[in-house]
Amino acid sequence: MSVIELTFDPSIIEYNNYMTDFENCSSCKNIPKTLMVEKLHTPKRLPKEVSELSTIGGYATDGELRKCQHCLTYYIYHYDHDSESGVGNGYTDEGITRISNAEAKKMLPDLLKSAEASLDYWQKDLDRPASQQFIVSHQKEVTRLQKEIKILK
Ligand SMILES: [Zn+2]
Image (cartoon, rainbow, N blue to C red; front, side):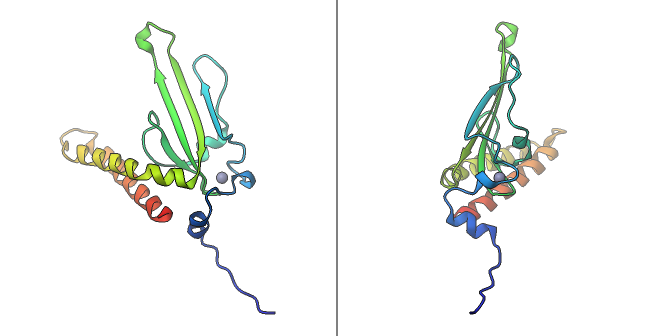
């Protein structure tokens, strides 16, 4: 009997599987399919594993794309705070939703466009003291998004 040697290439697993093996993941198995908590007036919090997810791109107010580095599952992280100008009670919503690779793939071109637009904006505004910092962070974001597009193509 011959032995076929297999080398592990996570990008191939990711490409072939619509959904990843999050149920057996040491990191993200405790994150539910979708959960939204209100942090300002309730003691409810997202599972601590949400903070272990890597950020790929996007803004948390619109939905930030995150990824588990262990099982490669994608998530949308949402964060929104509104003080209601001191008139209302205000709120701080935080949420997480697990998405399929196909859903992540659909989001990526728009996230890349938005990151490139932000990079462009800050590059035109070099006089502002914070510009350099934003340029570096948006350059990193563009690189991360391009990498994900390549993986999911
Ligand atoms: Zn995971």
